[in-house]
Amino acid sequence: MSRMSTDTVRHALNGPTMGTRWSALFFAAPGLDPGPVQTALQAAVAAVDAQMSTWNPDSDLMRLNAAPVGDWQDIPGDLARVLALGLAIGRASGGAFDIGMGDAVRAWGFGPAAADPHAIRSAMETARRPAHELLELDGTRARKTAPLSLDLNGIAKGYGVDRLAEVLGDHGIRNALVGIDGEMRAMGLRPDGTPWTIAVEAPDRDRRAPHSILTLEDAAVATSGDYRHWVTVRGRDLSHTMDPARGVPLLAPPASVTVIAPTCAEADAWATALMVLGADAGARLARQRGLDALFLVRTGAGDVQGLGVGRIFSAGSATAGLDVSD
Image 1: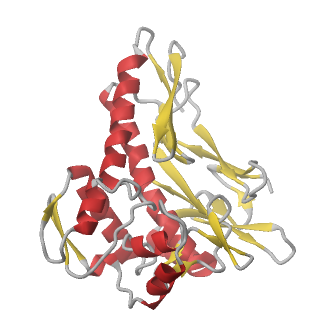
Image 2: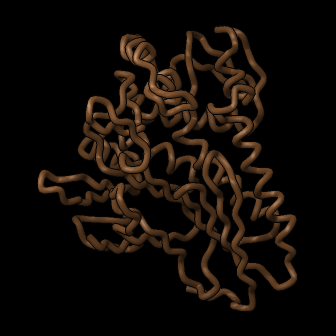
Image 3: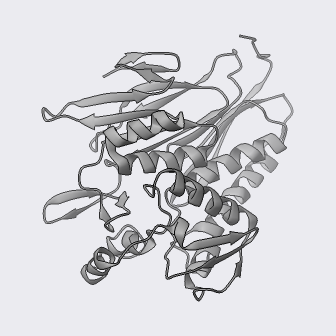
């Protein structure tokens, strides 16, 4: 493996976005002014949020949600790209990833408002069809062919990470690690020529600790889990990930699913899809699609068991790219 020059300066930038923070760690030649880079990074994620937020009633996504059925709506290019990718992964996953779950997400209290029992009943009683059957795209235009409430929380942060990487590339930066709320993308290598290292969290609500350590080079990683965002209904904690078939939170999901992909938007969406499918069906689809995935599943004894698919993990032992520390 070739080594990069160590005559570089380390920069660590961050800022607010999507209710959390973005980060960018990179190494650049001496003399680089990080100020314009910080400004461009913040502008990039702000644009993603302005287009795709469900918390902002004036976002482009919410404008599309409010548009009459059958009317073509002009949409920004970033939103068009994310909708197209979301629909494609929806089809490829058999509807396990569905960007049309906005009504259920809001009903169960995972949006700006608290859970609403009447809305929950409505979401459960609605005859559901996946978004890839109800949304048409034509370049930077979109229209709904039936009532549809879009939600991009399973892909927008990943796309925001990809935009961070693109901005760094535009500034001539080739070696970096960028992220939003645990969704990460690695560019190039560290100054010593080694890959970037990223921790996969143990699925523990009470503390943050690593379960596994990934090494990444020019790839992205995202994790979907049941241990950070949930609601408690009648004494039972329910994951924020929705069952697209029923309009309710998943009742027995894996503790987490981590996916490595070329882009963070892809990793983000596929992690959600495999979470919905569960460890058995999800692992089968991951193998069929050639995905690198790690499923963490809680056992009856309260332990966590890892199931890996692809190059990063195999048969419970460490392989290239993943060290396991149960």
